[in-house]
Image (cartoon, rainbow, N blue to C red; front, side, top):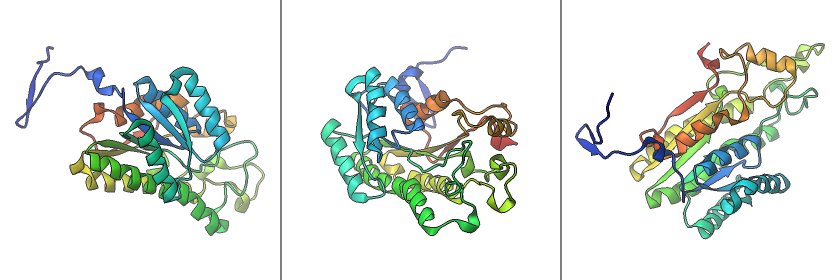
Length: 292
């Protein structure tokens, strides 16, 4: 099958472009919140491999310095770090100013920061709090980072993109934005029902809220050429207890959890010109779990 160099669709003529060139991010600057975490680093690798410059943002200075040092070993000064509390608007304004002074523009924002208790052999009962005992303080703290932080970064950095007429925002949601947590995954043998650990309510609320934020912003700034999408990843294998891995894998058609680098290509697609006609979209990348 041959493809013409020019195609006319609904009256518009588009010149030929090598498809792979649409993934190119050379001379584009990306801000990645939660940049010192596992997925923040993976997002940076994906973007840097395509030529981007990345500013990793985190509140944990020690972890941030380690992440930046690791990535600079491969990408040099195209990766820098910025300590920032994204729950404070003045910090986010300072982040934007720092980015503009450093590289003059910000074309990509990845709202990745979240508080997500990790499954381990000794799960902290406070982190995996049951709904009946869930404190307002913990509720406010986790919504502040995962949802208010994404709102503030989008408000400040997205507004700058809108003024300049170009930009992409990617919100990192979860399969738990679409389905409820299966609390059987977290059960510990021998514990009474009222002490069993659970996935906290805040995680589902934050990730579902990000889908709403994605839809809202995608229409709000569409006329100013700012695209806003989200990705809903499934669980990533990070050496969790084997019993948990087996339980979760049995709920996934592909029969396994994701490897940490398996979302890189999807993230790159969503922040590059390869997805130039996508906005308000949520891509579910969960090994098929939400299909069952």
